[in-house]
Structure formats: structure tokens, C-alpha cells
Image 1 (spheres, helix red, strand yellow):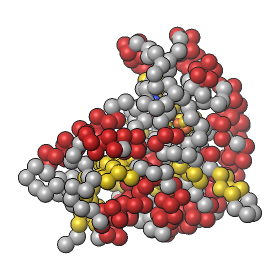
Image 2 (cartoon, protein in one colour):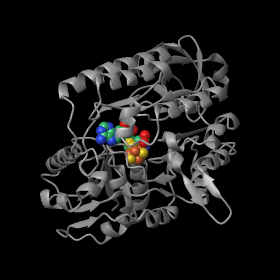
Image 3 (cartoon, protein in one colour):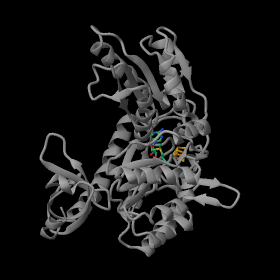
Image 4 (tube, protein in one colour):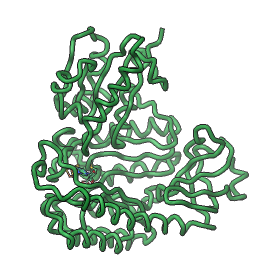
Length: 444
Ligand code: SAM
Ligand code: SF4
């Protein structure tokens, strides 16, 4: 009988990619992916440690699993991801229901761990083995056949922003060999993937050297642009320090590179950027912005913001608001600073919770206004959509335009995987709603 596995994924796109690769790996052991959480042989929680309550979320989820399996045989319970890395043995001590704790750089061991699993023999694997991990996964086909697929090219971080846990949970920067990334991309394209989103904690720090050359993310983009069946290229998350001219140039030379740049700045105050150890200034950020806008004024930006970083005054906060008004980011993430154990900022004096909440509301009000303005600008206009799927439980189709806006419309499933023009009739903050333009009808 086939064995079943379920993976609950928290956090970033990289975790989503990892979960899919874990499915690809355990398929070799005869496991199939199950949608039914309450009836599997192996249950994996892929965790995120970036902000507070990360640990609590994991123990809460385990509590839910325990209830689901009260009357049944317990599944092999694996906690993977960044919380596993950060908490390691501590998790096994606190929660006996967990069988295996598996850090993000040890996923190549998962098949052996499951195959050799012995009841009550608790295991913790949290070494930093990025090279071994990617070598292992290079030999396992990426089965993803969604219209849009992630592809990890780089992992880890050497930048050590004082608030961030990533260098401690994902380890030092590691860039995969150029040829391995391209062969994974080719495989995805053969599977029918039409959009590739290159991933990394610092995706634009990608640097792979062989005897002949240093390969950068720009080389990957230029190469991907040449595949006729591939329609769109994106990358995330990039750091301003690594936004080099060769990458900026890609916006003039590669029509498949989408005109939407997610480039986190975190704060509009140079004083705070310095305290955060961000290694860039607001002026340097604006310089990148101007260079890219000069190539194509239709390119839009989004960012991440941290509010109430220790030491942030009203003036610093207003500088962030002013920057948002200047750039008019179309879609951004904003968070209240959350002290992470082990980081430089872990023990700094926190800004009052109520004040922080007020500030967050204010910043989000401003960000959401620009987001809605951008969405409204599409009304009664046509927008180019890559159709991704049929919405669950509905007749509608879902796709994204070039700026990553969600677009929802009626249509035939034959449109999935195609680029079509949608005339936008209505919008809200998160989505655009429209109709297929008549000229597309013949394309289906
Ligand atoms: N590497 C990217 C960069 O440098 O911009 C960011 C990657 S990080 C995984 C994603 C986002 O989480 C960050 O941009 C930051 O806004 C947020 N973040 C990270 N640590 C945080 C913390 N301790 N408190 C609040 N937000 C945090
Ligand atoms: Fe974290 Fe990004 Fe800073 Fe690295 S560059 S420490 S991933 S915020």
C-alpha cells in the first residue's frame, strides 16, 4: 500500500520551494502527497522563525495533529525549517510527540531518516551542509508543473542585519552551480512551467565561480530569457547592496523579466539603517530606483519595512513615510520589529507596543493607498495576464499581471498557461476583476 505524507508550510517562498522538493524526494520511498492532514504516515511541519510567536505556532500545530490522531496510529512527526534549526534538541525535550527535528540544510537526509525510522528513537539533524543538500537534490527531478514555479539559486546570508535570524538559521551564503540551475529550469519548462521565480534569501548576491567565469544572477536571467516556451522571469528577495549594474541592465535587454522589483529598504532613515547594519543608505537606494526607472519608467517597486526598530524616533518614522510617498511602492510588507534570540538586536529596549501598533497602522494606510491607486489605474484598461489556475470551488480563473496583481475572471480552463488580455472592470486592494478581451477568445 502506498504511504502518505502531508507537509504544512509556514513562512516564505523558500519554504514553499523546500516543501515541494521534500515531496519530490520522499516520492522515491513510495510516499504520495496527501491533502488529508488527518490520515497520513508522515507529517512534516516546515517552520519559519523570522518573527515572534514562531515557536508557539509550531507547538500549536502539533497540538492540532495530536487531536487528529487521537484514535489512530501516530504519523512520523518531523519538524523542519528555521525553527527546527534554531531550537534543535530543545524541541525534542519539550514535545515528545516530535520524532525528528530537521534543519533546512539537512533535507538531503530525509529519505534515510524516514527509511530507518525506529519508534521512540528521537533524531536531531541541524548541520549546515548546503553543498551536500543541493548535490543530493540535483539528482532528484523537480516535479513541479504549475504554471509558475520557484527555483532556489542561492541560500543563506552573510550580511547579518542586526534584527535578522536568517544567517543563523540558513547559514552562510551558498550559490548553486550555474549549470545545475539551468538544467533544473529546463526540466521545469519541459514540465510546462511558464514563469520561473528565482529564489534566495539574498537572491541578487548569487555568485558562482568556475574556472572560466563568475556567474551572476544577470547571467541566469539572460540565459532564461532565451527559452521560447518560458514567458516570465522574476526574482526575490534582493538586497540593495547587490543591485549591481549588470542586473539593472537586464531590465533593458530581457523582455521576459517582469517590470516589478521587490527591493526591501526596511526604513527611510539613514540613522536606523545604520543601526540595523543594513550596509546601504536611503540615497543609494534612490540611486538604484532612478537607474531602473530611467531604463523603463513603467517599472514599479515594492519593499519590506520594519517599524519601531529600537531607537526609531518620530522623525525617523516620518522619513520612512516620506520615502513611501516619494516612491509610491505598489505592494509592500510592513512589520513591527520583533526581537529574535541570538541576533544583535535581541536585547535592545523596545518601543511601546501601543505606539508601535499606531505607527504600523499609519504606515499601512499609506502603503495600501498607493496599492489601491495602482489597482484603480487598471480600470477600463487591458492588462496582460498569465493564467495560473482555476480557483478552488469556483468557476473563475486566476492569473497575475506583470506587476504580480491577482486577476480574477470567467473563462475556460484551456486558457491556463496562456498569456491573455483581461479588460479590468473592478478592483479592490488585493485583486483586479475583469473580462477576457474578445480578441483572445480565438486563442483558447
Ligand atoms: N534578505 C532580504 C533583505 O535583506 O531585504 C529580506 C529577507 S527577510 C527573510 C524578510 C523580511 O522579514 C525582511 O525584509 C524584514 O522586513 C522582515 N524581518 C526580518 N527580521 C525581522 C524582525 N526581527 N522583526 C520584524 N521583521 C523582520
Ligand atoms: Fe536577513 Fe536579508 Fe539582512 Fe540577510 S540581508 S540578514 S536575510 S534581512
